[in-house]
Image (cartoon, rainbow, N blue to C red; front, side):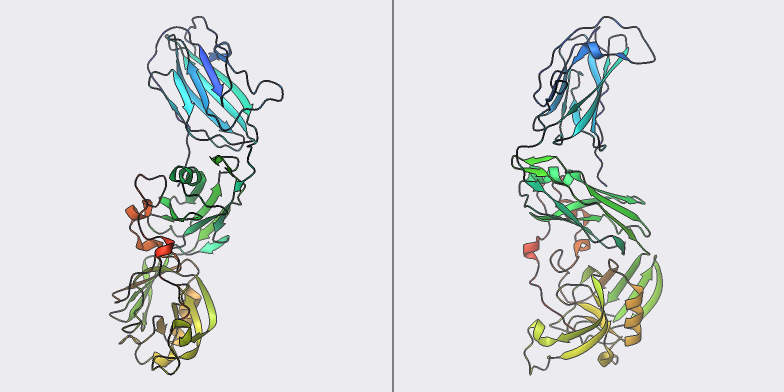
Length: 425
C-alpha cells in the first residue's frame, strides 16, 4: 500500500538560543532570538523564535507553487521536527538537514487548502520548544484538472481482480507521473504488498505481489485534489472505490492432461475433463481473470477470420459461457465435444466441458477469479489490452512499470498487446 508519512529529524544538541526563519511558498519571515531555557518536561513556547508574515496577513494566501521552508539562522539551536498536514489529513513530506538548520518540503502543497504546521526546536540544554501555526494556500492559476476514475465498480470480486485508474488527461513526464502515482492510495485489510504499473499515458493498473487475500476489504482513493502536477495541470476531485474479495477460487487447466482442477481456499473442490485449443488455435497459456459471465452466446467462426465453407467454420449456440479475454476466449459448455473432453484438444481456443460441468463452473466463479492454463502450445496471455494478464509479469517487471521505482518501465505496453479478436469455441 502507499502511505505518505511526515519526515522526522532528530539530531545532536548544539548551542543556546535559536532563530528560526519560516518561509512558506515564497513568503518572507522575520527573525528573533531567545534566552536560555531550563530543562522542562513540557515544550516551551517557541513563538518568539518563529515569525510568519504571509498567511497571517488579512486576505493573503500562500502560493502553493512554492515550497514550505523552515530554517534556523543562528548557530545557537536546531530544528528537531517539522510536521505539516492539511485539513483532510494529508501530510507534507520534507527533509531536515543533518545539522538541523533547515527543513523544506519535498512533496507539493495543495491549492486552496488549509495547513497546520508544528515546528519543534531544541536548545543546547536539551530544552524543547514548539510553535504551531496555520496558513491557507491560494487557488491555482490554471483551471485544468486531472480526474481519476477507479475500477472496477464497487462490489465483491475474486482474488485476481486488478485495480484500474483511468486519467482524463495524459501524463507522460516521469516526474509528473510520480506525483500522480504517489497520490493514488490502495489499502487492504488484511494488508497486501502491491504496486501501480503505468499501462500508457492515461491508465494505471494496481495488483498485489501475490493474489489478494480471501475476504479482504480494499479501499482506493486519490489525494490529488489541489496538487500541482505541471504548470498547467492540477489534481481534481475523484470518487473513491471500495471492493471486497470472496473465497480464493483458482481454476488450473492442464492442456496436456485435458483436465481442469478447481481450488477453493487452496483445497481441490472439483476436477473436470476438458478440451482446449487444437493446433493452430492453441489456448493461451498463463493467468487470466474472469471478466464476466453470459448464459448464452452465439459464436460464429466468421468473427475470428475463418471463412464460410472452411472445415473449421462454425455457428453455434453456446451456454454457460465464462469470459476470460475480450477477444472471445471462454470457459463454456461444449456438448458436441464430450467424446474428446479429457483426452484430446479439439476447440478453436476456448476451454470446453460438458453442460453440467459448465453450469457448475458458471455458478461457482465470480468476476475476478483466476483461470490459469498450463502446458498449452499457445502464446502467453497478453499483459494488457485483452483482459487482465497482469499476473503473467513477474514482480520485478511489474514494479518496473511504476514511476516511483528506479529504472524504465518493463514489460509489454498496451500497444504491444495482440490485436483483439471476437469469440472462438
